[in-house]
Length: 208
Image (cartoon, rainbow, N blue to C red; front, side, top):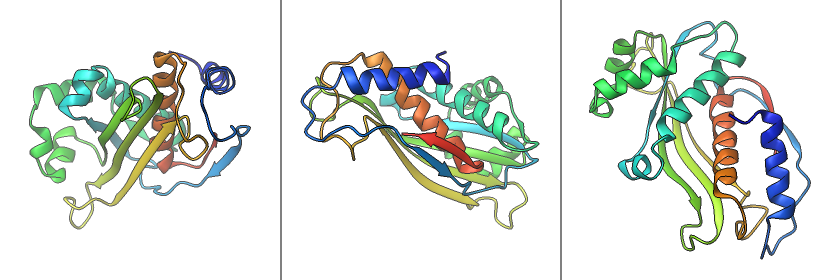
C-alpha cells in the first residue's frame, strides 16, 4: 500500500504532468484544518461497515474491503482511546449475513457487539468521467452514518452526513485527466475519501 508521502507525490505528478485539455489553472495544494463533526467515538468500541452496490462490487471487487480497512485504520490511529473491531472480522460477518442491509441499525450494532457503528453507504464510485470513459476522474460519494447503542432510539442515526470526493477536484478543473494511469487515480481517490470519511471523528489537516 502506498505511503502518505508516495500518495502526495503521485497526486502532484498526475496534476502537473498528466493534465491535458484542462480549461482552468491548477492551484498549488493547500492545507486545510478540519474540526471533528462528531466526537462520540472517543473511548468506545467501534465497528466500521461499508455498503456498496452490486455494480460497484462487480467493477471494483476490492472496494468494500479496501474502504472498510482504511477507514477502520484511520479511526484506530486518530480517535482517542477507541477500540475498533478488526475490519476483517466485520467483512466475514457481512459475508455470512448477506441481507444485513435490510436489518434495522439497532440489530446491526447488537450483532456486532459494539457501542458505536459507523455505516458508510457508498453511492457513486468510479474512475472515469460519467460521459466519456477516456477522461479520468475518480469520484466516490457516500452517506456516513453513526449508530449509538445507548441512544434513546438506536434505529435513528446519531450522526449522518453526505460526502463526495473527486480527484482531480471538480472545482479546480472543468474536465478530468486525459492521459493518466487509472490505478494512480484510483489510489489517490480512495485515499482522499477514507481520509475525509474517518476525519469526521477527529481534528485533522488535509492537503488538497
